[in-house]
Image 1: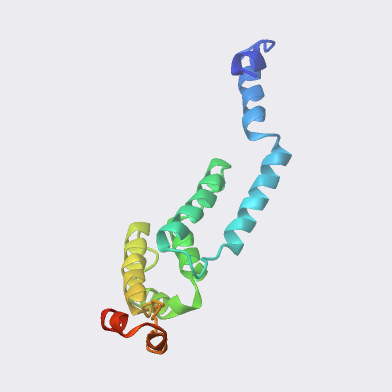
Image 2 (image 1 turned 45 degrees about the vertical axis):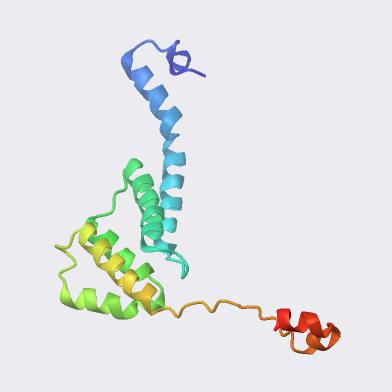
Length: 155
């Protein structure tokens, strides 16, 4: 349905506004429910062990933007503290370093993400290299089955 069809029967600008607002935001009850769900998503948000900082940040930003669109914005300080709390346990030394060395109230998100990305590079470098499986063929026992003229080629 087109926007113009939704408001065809409205008699004034206020009715048009109210109709479109309810359509896009929902009623106040729907909005409160969406806020409750968003707050819950924010509270239980965690970074997965196999997730990168950028992937975590993208998921987190979606939740924060949803909340802002509903009129429930989190401060920079609240978002920074939540990001530090959501990191996996292997990040705890870095979290402690950041919280001890920096003033979280005056820190901006880009500085935090930059520090976390730099540490992520260090963590990636510390991971042991995956062993490549190799396949070797032992043909010593097979040489007995070939005629002597082929043994020279095989050896």
